Length: 282
Picture 1 (cartoon, rainbow, N blue to C red):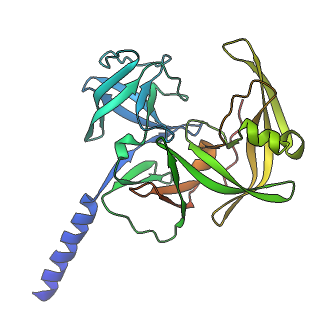
Picture 2 (picture 1 turned 45 degrees about the vertical axis):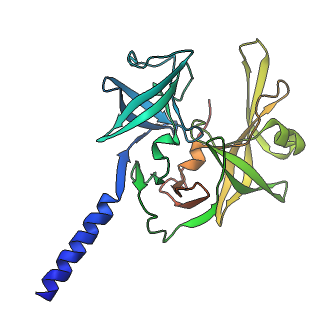
Picture 3 (picture 1 turned 90 degrees about the vertical axis):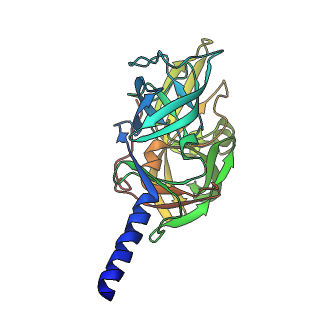
């Protein structure tokens, strides 16, 4: 009888633990973008790219699916509902005409996880939302810096045999590895100190030429994890378009991430992609 009672208590405990977390499946594209299937305002079915560098949502002018039931005023639409799986999120704000990643009709940010601890589980292609902190065995922790709904981490870069701490914006919309700011690229003379593997010239909307260069960073240290020969891009010449350093989707996928509810700390472990070939930009 005692054993049966203990078993029932264990089952109840397991049930509570299961209820304390929510799983949201996603699809990872060949461009490293996370795609979530959503139903907007109970009508419009959209594939939205998860953008960790924003809180709200947006739709793209290049979307393939209709979004007729998102009503905009001055390119802003407030108080929308977003259904993902069996969960509905209220009060979601959408912005109009924002470009997004490959295979997506728009973007959705971290606002759906507000006040919750959440995990990006690249091993199983899912988000996990927790009511309490999960078991962190096997994870390393580091400070997380938040500003205007965006998250930054510090990582050590080794350039020309010199190690330096660099602040990086987590940017899941950028398919590649690192993208350095103009200030950092110029100050560190990256054009000469990195091994350059490619160069491309593009025109912006003002008709100005923008030169992007791809190089290789020999070593990068995140916590106690070391990545070698990391792809690293930067802009050369004028105009000075890149304001911050990006930690892109190709690097994000190499770890599983747990963000605490207060967004003060992040916990990481190697994912199944840790040693995968680096993404090559075209």
